[in-house]
Image (cartoon, helix red, strand yellow):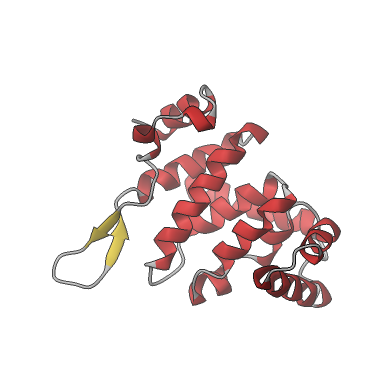
Length: 180
């Protein structure tokens, strides 16, 4: 199955009614490389192709799929030795869908490993807007929310959100150029 066909089939079916067999095509599937301790993901390449297709045609109805894909990327990166562009692209797409409640999942992606903490852009956390995200996090009395709130407030003071629209334009361009 091609990524385009996968996206079409997902869009033609309500997400909660998708067949498990279809989702298994993009789900994390551990791969252990022979004679090493290294691990990989058998579905990482196809998942990236799906993310690239979504980047070209993203719509609000893709929200459940993008959330599912980010959860798979988090699992992949829990076992990875670096950060792959797939988690960044997925985080970017989820931030574009601008649902404030996604900050928890985006924070989980950012804090998955040292590499994701460094390479997963803080701007992804505030897709629904800085003020909305801060307000939302202030209403949650959980440790992760307070940690995310502190991080976002420090990033705001550092000017990381000064020109979010420009950041989004540049990020779109970078991901488009990578897929050509």
